Amino acid sequence: MATYNLRSRKLDPQNTEREEMKENSFAKADTSRLTFTDEEDRPAMSKPTNIKLFGWSFNTAIAATHVNIFLYATCFWIQTGALPYLTKKLGVDMVVFGYLQTTFAVVQLAGGPLFGRFGDLFGGRAAMILAFTSASATYLFLGLADSFPLLFISRLPSVFMHAMQGGQMIVTDMGDKEQRAASLGMLGLSYGVGMVVGPFIGGLITKFFSEQTAAFAAFLGSLLSIVFAYFFTPKKTKKASVTSTIEEKPSSVFDVKKIVRLVMAPGAMFLLIIRAAAGIPIGVFQSMFSVVALETFKLPPEQNGYILSYIGVLTMIVQGLGVGVLTKKYSETSILKWSSFSLIFSYLALSFVTDVQQLCIVIAPLVMGLASSNIVISSALTRTVSELDTGAMLGLNMAVNSFIRSLSPTVGGILLKYYGFASFGYLGFVMLTGVTIFLFLRMKDV
Picture 1 (cartoon, rainbow, N blue to C red):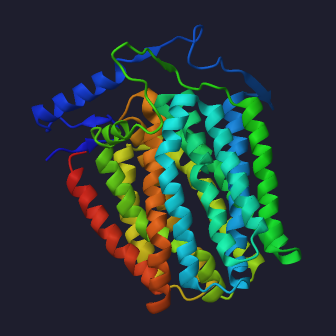
Picture 2 (cartoon, rainbow, N blue to C red):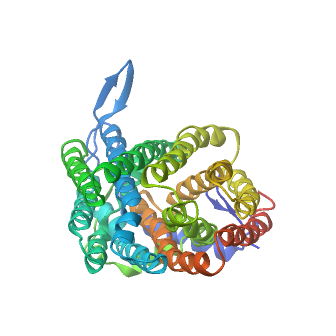
């Protein structure tokens, strides 16, 4: 059986000659159009500029990207915390709320791969501006919503609301390839800070003003991000440029064959399947968390915000600090296998939670395992393709996440209504047990 080694980024020697030929031909096809340049001559990537703060030197573009990811997370979690209370005020039950979340996920699923291709073709600045324009429109329509149909309409502009994916693309393009997992983890640190601040601010705005006011605050924050992206993100971030030939047709954002080809890259399908299988249980839990806080634990908006901020702190610590430490000591393969193993017991414990204090305790190992495995998979996926196509691969990774979120709210609403909160934990226990067994069998020699 062929196995995929995340550290060496190629199929193990046990693979057949036919598989090796397939891998080599793919690499040749994708790199024949690339021209890599040195630091003094970069026609594709703008020359990096640095800023110094407290004696430390930072790449301006990457620093601006971290600021934008912080703003994106802050705005996203402001409206996320306010949304269930707005829907309840408009008379929406938990099942229909699940349909609303499904609509949001399906729209993002449609836009994720296209956004990745857009970033590869038109550069980091255009991608980030597109993402924050989409976010601004989403939050603006949400703030204007005074009926349930308008809530659904507010989800439609989110088709290209993929700022995190855009930030990952910029960090991947401009950062050190060997430190990619740690760099993506640091980007998660910035997102985690926003996830701490956003729910707290959103809860207070909702308490003292209204849910619509919280949405308008998110709208203004997204407009600020557009300004940051325009002035501080280079037009081109890749270290490679395309050298077209007369025979080659111009590539486009809607190149379906290209996307299919990336999915079939050696190791990519395996990683995407693992991401999907391991992500379904947490997707169900996340999609219904605000409803659970409201209906099961009877939390008011500000306390719901505190719980989300707590999750953000945990995510921030694991992605910003933990992943970097782990990747220095252990292979990405080991991290993926053992984080999956730890999640089995975390989900089992989740099924026995009966109060908020227990929930806070169980969430800690759950977040640690998920954050570690997600960063490792994202990093490994970008190394299954050429530097020219990392944005599209990150788009596919995001598409898997959107696919999960398109199913999760409906599944979560049904589980919560008919089987209760404990069913979320049992679902995760069963699925992660299967994923872990598969990983250990597939990677037993790695």
